[in-house]
Amino acid sequence: MARLRPVCIGLLIAAIVGGMCHSAVAADTQCRGGTFDVHDYGAVGDGTTLDTKAIQAAVDDCMQAGGGKVYVHNGTFLSGTIYLKSNVTLYLESGAVLLGSTDLEDYPATVPAFRSYTDNYTEKSLIYAEKAENVSIMGRGVIDGQGASFKGEYKVRPYILRMIECSDVTVKDITYRNSPMWVQHYLACDDVTIDGISVHSKVNSNNDGINIDSCSKVRISDCEINSGDDAIVLKSTSDRVCNNVTVTNCVLSTNCNALKLGTESNGGFENITIDNCTVYDTRLAGIALELVDGGTFDRVTVSNINMKNVGGAIFVRLGNRARPFKKDMQKPGMGSMRNIIVSNVQAVGADMTGCSITGLPGFAVENVTVENVRIRFRGGGSRSHATREIPEVPEAYPEYKMFGILPAYGFYVRHAKNVRFNHIDLGFEEADERPAFVCDDVTDLDILDLDAEGTPSAHALIWLKQVDGAFIHGCRPRATVTTFVRVDGDSSNDITLMNNDVSRVARVLEKGESVGENAVYIRNNRTR
Image 1 (spheres, rainbow, N blue to C red):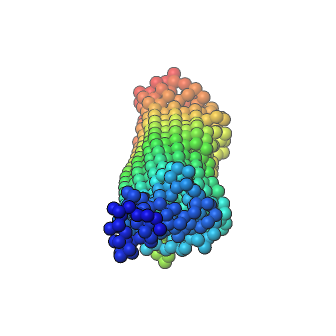
Image 2 (cartoon, rainbow, N blue to C red):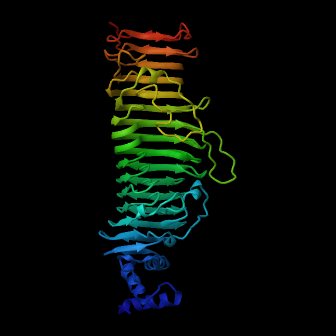
Image 3 (cartoon, one colour):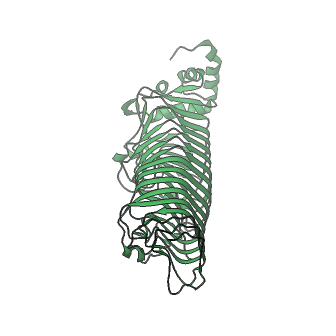
């Protein structure tokens, strides 16, 4: 037994009587500023000895003592599930590694009281906390899940970290590596701060970097993520809304989507701000905003995003997969999507698919503003791509390539209301015969200061179909454009072209036969 300092004798007696500590050594550890050293509990840290019990004992004593720091240092600590408790900080010193066991038996099944669709995904985690308060994971150490060792579908691949119905959560400076499943999942938590972490995980399926699920008051900042699945993704796999979330100053690369809201969206999303992020080498969308399982999507702002080598730059989708989040539950009703701002975005190396903002017939995406956006696409689209029939697929999984090659190389907008494009600069690497914009079944459209490349063989630079109320102004189409605006559809009406410099195009307007005689107004445009 370690020799105790005199000031600790009283505490040791209390610990023995109250069952607070496992040993006199633990009591002495507590005396040292509330720090519980896992070595004092028998942790070996050689990377082969299972240290789960020692680490858990330190956590339990720390909680029983009223809180403090569980100190992990000088070694590689092999472990199964660790249950984190209230008022406990798990601190990994620089150079220390918490190494997930490769034996599934070391991860007991833990079913939370809070029900969500993630019940179908996993019951196992390396670090788990439920209904804990003031809980933290900090330090410059590494948590490695050894995810490549786990084979199979859901429930046989643990998360590295899972927190459910916790409050006052802080995760800071840690590096996560090689998760078997999602790297970290925060479900129905309040007051979450994730700051300065790194995630490097591309060793298995479903390697999402950060999952914020049905949470409130979340701050994510200064993180670097390189993940096999979505990098930072907000979800609502329950009927609890995911709201009051900020994401800022992050660097992201992923095999899937970089910044995503959805796919699971039963509770919806409200009051979300994403700002000052860079995205590179991302296979799917840089920005993906999705609502397909009911809920309300309202007041979401994404700004100051730079992207290089992404599949699609911007993808917005209101669908109706309508998947219940509990067994034997009725399907949710149709959701709503409104009040979205995407601004100050630059992207190079986007593929030829294009960007899309789409709702469903009778269920429009409403109040969308896209401004100060510059995107360079791969190009290569043909006139046949521009005229192909686009299916509605309301129940389909939402993905930026779900419609195939879009009719517009820039933005395809369908089933939308009150949509504004301000100061948009679009171009392509390879000549593209599609319009820059195709808008179909859109009410109240505003396009200001569009600078977009075009080809002489394209139907038009802007193609409007069944558009009721449009104001196109302050644009200066390039000499390579033959027709500035084409309008089709018997519902197209109240369309104004004003204060545009069209001196370099052959035709300002082309109308289909079904368009009313007075449907389009042309005023104060500069011509040849």
